[in-house]
Length: 112
Length: 114
Image 1 (tube, rainbow over the protein chains, first blue to last red):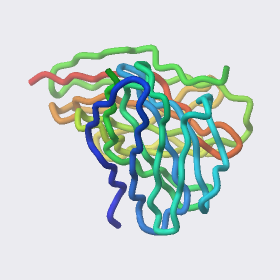
Image 2 (image 1 turned 180 degrees about the vertical axis):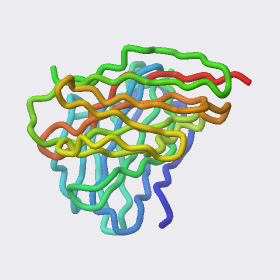
Image 3 (image 1 turned 180 degrees about the horizontal axis):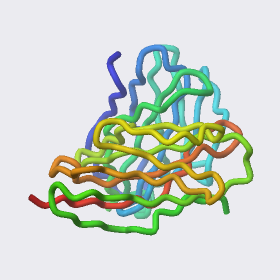
């Protein structure tokens, strides 16, 4: 097991820009989820991918989008960044529809 | 809203004290999972325990123990003989939604002082 790795660890972007965050899931984990954690809050579910298809979405606008690739890696894309998008973004993977989630250390995004 | 409530925002204890973190959840689901995660300053969520809604047997693992009471929708977590390394934010979560995504509480920040 190699765990879940996310890149970059920190990122500063300007309001209105676009950003792509990356995640390398644990080998064999075909389900990946992304969460947004604002300062002092619990993580909030953004969306989930299973076998490269989005199969669940939280209360986030369409400018939050994602991709999952056959090699268990995935991306979170955010367009038209807003100041409130500043947060820790966490990637989590698991095998199938059950089992525990393995989380990465996150990417801390700051929008100025 | 089917939410998870962690009423304790911050707890401070002295090393070797026992500490209990409270969690109350709401759900209309008959089957669900409950979780506790630990988040150290590094940011990674560290899995501690998962409990199926049908399994109310309480569990002890080393210094950790969990008390699941379905009748009161509570899933409390106790650390016995706390240590400085236990200092972190602890999150309670449950599965929700059709795809089993996690719904988290706001977390309890535990500070263990030497």
